[in-house]
Length: 73
Image (cartoon, rainbow, N blue to C red; front, side, top):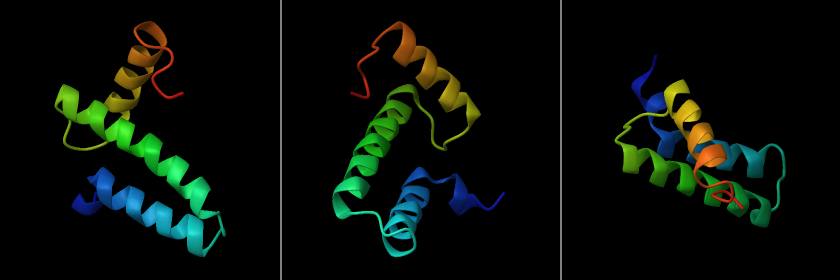
């Protein structure tokens, strides 16, 4: 896999650009996505992940459902 595609910051900036330029999402909607992505990045940093992967999803889901259900609200 291309190394840059493992970088969450790269992926989220590319997606934000695509949402605005190709799908015509409003700036406010894109900001909402970016807020969630920042929380995911913070979670990844707090548990030591350098790259986004399925393990991050599993741990985040487990954290969100068992320890802090309002984490993304």
